[in-house]
Length: 180
Image 1 (cartoon, rainbow, N blue to C red):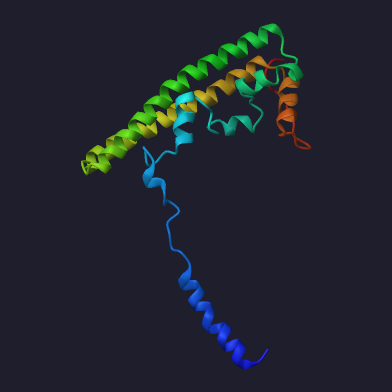
Image 2: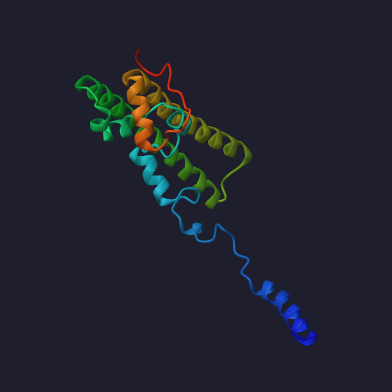
């Protein structure tokens, strides 16, 4: 390739860079009802879904009640274990839905204050602290239920749960899990 072609190519490259869009990754989110929450996230909060709040437990051999119920057959849950797990599942759903609704309401309030230009430093701090407190309570609620499940399942069932969920790793030990 001759020198004039290289010069032409080199002069075009900066123009291509200028032609690129410089939009924000947030573009389109201004249309959301609550700017900080997607419709899926709002629904997850309102339905009491886990939304990965219990990963510290789930990925460290503390099964969750929903997945334990889904895997009841392969885990060979006894009738008593199934009843206990259903109770734990019902408890987390009730608590998570309540807390999720409160989080959505507070996020909606925060969004409204910003949208209306009615936010001040004191109100901001109060509202954000309340949202953070509620989010912490929601996470505790989910993690606590995984802790309860550890006492319901046998160590063999916990190991099988991990395998069925795809968490099994070579050399991972499952000692001291659940019942003895």
